[in-house]
Length: 301
Image (cartoon, helix red, strand yellow):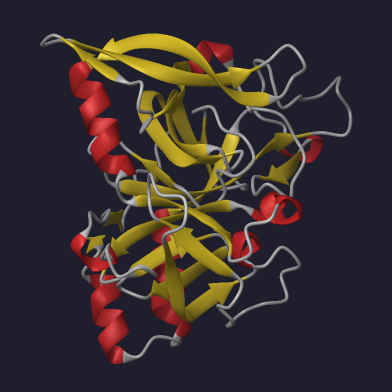
């Protein structure tokens, strides 16, 4: 698909942004799978029956109990990757603040990556970490607190944040949990067949995984087609090897519905390419030697 850059704008994917599920039907491999749903079931040696989150008849994304059969190996792979992805939510989790929810993912040593617009909707906060916590999966009231915002780039829409190791009730330890690796050098050749996985906090409901076929680099960033919705901002975009190749950021949008809609054959999503994320953080000079060493340990050159 040829994308006319001048015709498009981008809608950010934090829950503060507006827009629908960015969906290109021809390129979707899996829908939004509620990856840690208690109702997910392994069916024998080959298959898994998983819960899929879809829009209801009013156009609202709901945990509505739809089902899909996928390969057991795929389900286990997605679940393993999603273990390192967290809901990033306001400390005061009141109804009026849920619009600020987003995603962050652990890269090791209590370091997480997210979008700057997830940390700071107004883009004014570059170093304070008193607004957000990471929610421990499958708990209602256990969170990891932010320890330090090491670096944010409003221009690249990224933040590197260090979290406290222990959760608020001291039961869970972030640094003992899984972490994702980052790919330093990306193939610049467009691939119509490559399957990429996006994992994130879809609409603040829960951690979801989805897949789409096809990827390319443009002036926007890394374009991909896994289904997304608000709340997915700050999540990882992974290649078939399970390595992070992008930081999920936005979806295609246009004020003119005759050009591009958020849903339809021209819809696409955008991630900050991981080589840009890595270079921006390394060249910032903002990290102390110990933190830089920890960050570099997450990178596959």
